[in-house]
Image 1 (cartoon, rainbow, N blue to C red):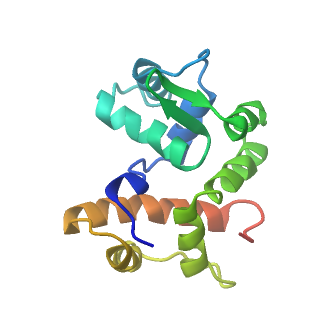
Image 2: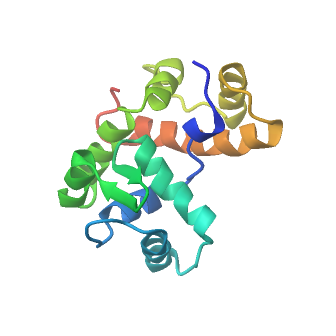
Length: 160
């Protein structure tokens, strides 16, 4: 696996990814919509570049698709929007995450029967072997990836 920077999501808060996907918009989600969805949850106004990290992560998970006019929900994104908050949404999110080759590879590498969550350092070492990211970028992206693995391990049926 040879990952580029754009293959590795920068969004570190899964709740915000869910909020972006389930935000009220029609038919296209703009950057302004993404910023608003995040502001409603956090009370903070993210810069466009930061806000789009969350929409781009949703694209990586197959929940949104991007085009020149913005983002739109995929079939998986619609399932997430229609799912009940909590366990049902978590399971839809988990299924969507596992559709990503990156997340499947991480799960294969790090999720075992003992359900031990890898350290950021462990993920950084793995990521270094599979990408050409700078050291500072490796650490930041590894932090997000660790949160994804932790979610996969601790949510519902941990078999992935």
